[in-house]
Length: 168
Image (cartoon, rainbow, N blue to C red; front, side, top):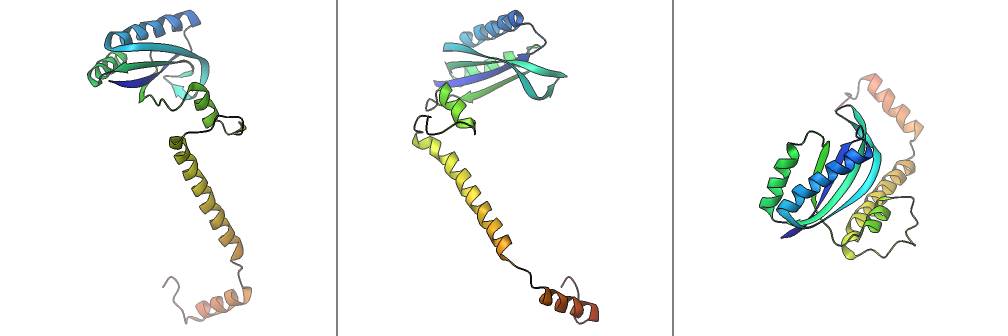
């Protein structure tokens, strides 16, 4: 049995009470096929892009333990709900707690105040640092390559004289 996290997006056109009722209904579906289901509301936020002409949504996360068969049955039930804009299942990463998820994704947070990341968290950061280092090297080589105007004039004269075929 694995631990999963379900991210729900309900339409922002619902009022808060209706959204709460829908999320509790979904929680009851989750409890039918799983164990230890916990729901947490993230609030109403603007969507990155409109879904079914709706620009705002209520976000909820449900953390639960389930078997693969139960997960498939839950996914089928959620697919039939009309009021649900999005539902996304992911394996729950126990290395992150909610505060670490927020600080890890936010670039403006002072990382000295955040908790020391575990070894698994270093991999994405190392990859990003490596990418930035190679980008800096490319920028340096582009700046270092000075163009000699005399060499360009000589090459242009050779091309115009017909001694060199362009593109070869």
